[in-house]
Length: 302
Image (cartoon, rainbow, N blue to C red; front, side, top):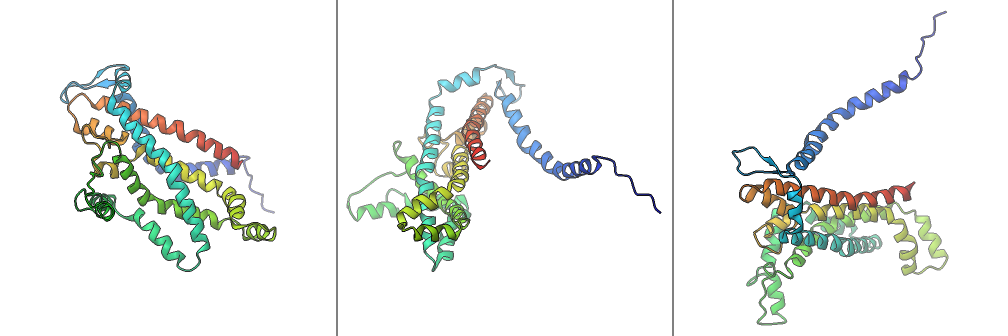
């Protein structure tokens, strides 16, 4: 009779842990190299000041962070980011949910409509910026042309007005991303069991009550995911704003990401440390906003 092989207690679980770490190690290395290391370097640089690119930086303590409190452009950029964030939550997400619910009832042509709404998401941002700059062109743009059908002598600089330029950029952002959130909500609607609809209709629920008491409560997880993505995207938004005129000196279209880029790469010497301080502030702001939202979602799911 052959001797049964001895199994060392815990050896199987230890092997699984080592195997998992072996598979995770390349991804962890990439994450540490391209995410954690730059974050740490930005934190270190935020306490430095460069007098010249040819000289080593000197430690300046909290001076870069104290400068944030009296920087008018920083507060303007932060206000614009908050505007994009609030607008995304109050306008973009409800519109996307409404469109998804309408498409959920529309059986014929639903695939085409879903593709049409999602198409702006896959378009290059540079092409979207050029397209909407043409639409907003003050003299011959389509928006100006449509307004002149009602007001013949209408003239308005859509993207040059300090009071409303970010509003029109926000309209462009909604056009670009509303299809993405619509697809998310349609995926959430697909997870709702058909028996819930049938039970509600048997109880005599109208379509309004069906949407309010059955569909929307079951879309809470999707709302949480879309809200998280909207918050993160609104805080770090850069490309479209920059291409449509953000990041220019003394502009009303500045956001934190364009301001960081201008400080670090476009302005004169001595501003790289201050740009790092703004980047650290943006990173902490994103954590303060997203972590409570995620914690609440996890608690609700558990």
